[in-house]
Length: 501
Picture 1 (tube, one colour):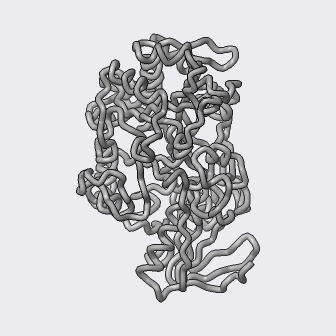
Picture 2 (cartoon, rainbow, N blue to C red):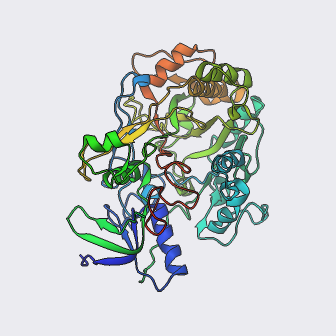
Picture 3 (cartoon, one colour):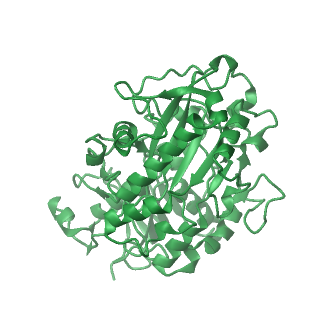
């Protein structure tokens, strides 16, 4: 192992997606500077679980995953949930599923309005979206997409002319029967409708880019678990993800005073917002028994042998939808006593996302015994505009201890109404359309639970959510802009030359 340097110009804590990209950009902009990335995990390049789309399912709970657990969730029958956190260079991109999904323009614009900086709005960020992309469709709008960036994107159909999953057309027809509009390009700011899945696999592989990098109160360095201290001559940059970033700040003396005092950590700057505002996309999977599995319709079937099927996720379509306005209004009234100015009611907001996966996705995590033999498919349903807020805190002053993760899932009526609507839409997709009925035989519940129909009661859906819902790996918000960092990502209470997140 290389010796640990005593100092570096820039120290980046966390070798995840953002940390690695930042190191690369800094090396290009400031070639005279030394840049050090501190990462607890290993180099993931060439790892057998990071190279192919189907291998990524096994990356969870592997040596690439911290595999945290949440505290018991009171709105999910006091169940502790899985909280994935990558451990290795390239971070979450090494263990995720490789989909390439740009959020709605309205969400970015809300962000910009909240922090009073148009640079964080959709039009302020589009130049960076374009810069990173090598978009698959040369005829796409050049104002929305880039064609010479480092990340190769591809829709399912463009990835290989032979990648034509057997259920592609029937599922599309089922959405059409529900009058859900087809969107040719969901990554152009308005994804409402059903569109083709876009991925960032290239020839069925992830590509981890490795580059040799040369070269008031102020954060001056980093103390490692080994006891070694490395001094930063310019900046310390924390890029340790949703779970570890607030933990590092708190261990450094920045956070809620009572949390720090509890663990005898000297207070350097009191900021009760550190580790708050935690939110995540809670998802529930529905599983379906195929009507004609002998036709080789799903992963695991002995007839699923077309090589191009392995070039990405076994999926074709992704649907973004709104919750009916009257339902959301009533939910917001229950949560806030007023819904007059709530932007969740805006026509541009997306509340749920539904994906059809040609495999029993999520069944293993939910401990639901469904065979992986080509006889079942799944529909993950995600709440995309969560209003539930949780916390990340610390359990001790030991940096090696896991953070205390409390997402506070499913705690608002707005979140419950949105996910219930999404479940009913997925049930309608397969149970109330002619095309859907030709695909599936029935919905498969966990043992001891009844099958759901599209007229299922709120109580029945909530009962199912409490049993199987879990993260969809999109945790965010614990170093909130405007509260913990400014719009230049500088940590509040620390001099501008010191620390950023």
